[in-house]
Image (cartoon, rainbow, N blue to C red; front, side, top):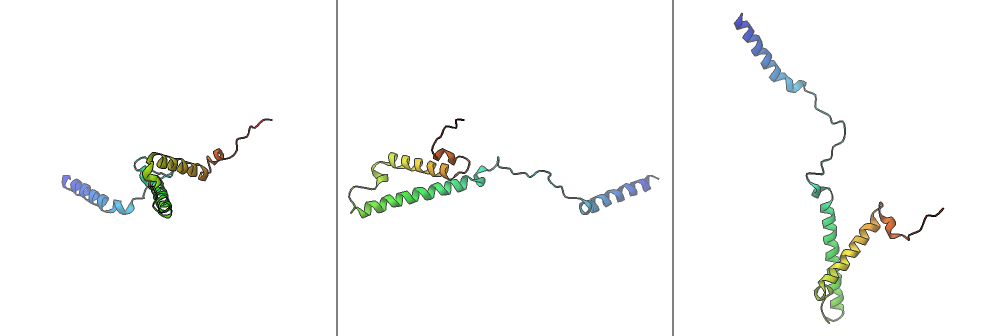
Length: 116
């Protein structure tokens, strides 16, 4: 009797391990899941960094072209006063971001009191 029980248990275990992957139903998420916490760089910071780098390159190139067109008098704006040059650039970039954002672009419009 013990021999038959062992064979039945062994056959049951073999059947379970062999056929369970074929009969398994894949799990489905009920709510969409976006894991931004682990890698926020991939969800926007790369694009922001790329945009900022392109703006800085464009402004430095424009300042260099203006310096060349003026006959090499003085030096480019980013060389004579880098704090003011990059500070103004930061203000312009922030202004472009605010103006381009649909949620906060009302800041760029005239302020009006809503009085009834």
